[in-house]
Image 1 (cartoon, rainbow, N blue to C red):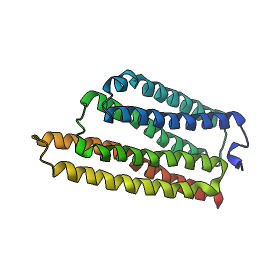
Image 2 (image 1 turned 180 degrees about the vertical axis):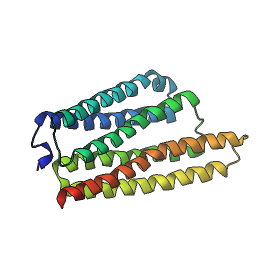
Image 3 (image 1 turned 60 degrees about the horizontal axis):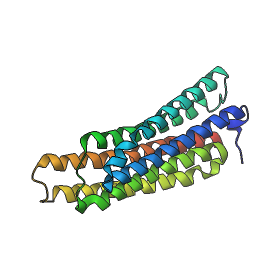
Image 4 (image 1 turned 30 degrees about the vertical axis):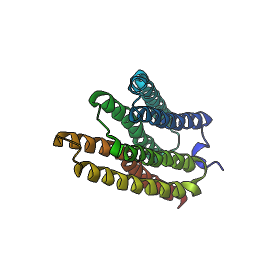
Length: 217
């Protein structure tokens, strides 16, 4: 069931759907590349880094076009501020995909075997949270009664990511497999960067929940 949001512009509907598709594509590229890194396929990882840069540029261009249409044609006056804020905050997730992959490329953290499974799980759960936000955004435009279902899933995956992040830190800092404290701190930093996907998702989901309430009262 389509809501009032798109009543005034099919073109705007197309743009927002394409933007959300692009965000999901960024998540898929991130999953592909981070799996390659964790599995030791460093050449493949490096060879395809441009893909995430291209998708980030595409997302930025789409968002600029959406902003222009919203304000130039005075579309969605009832919800314009909420829509812009949500889309802009979602863009931070795409930007994080690029930044984290570039950090892995530049700093080359050594993910030792005794925590590799946890790092893989952390990336998975944290990205799951971000993906549920996108589904919640689609529901906001198309089936607003479903928004809270996705928000609840965001919280679930965020809590899972938090638990895995803590487990990684405890294993790393209690380990005798590192000669230097700096290497432990290095892995802690990358665990925090991966977990930040879910932290951002939780923040966006809270904003999304409020925006949905405003639409239904």
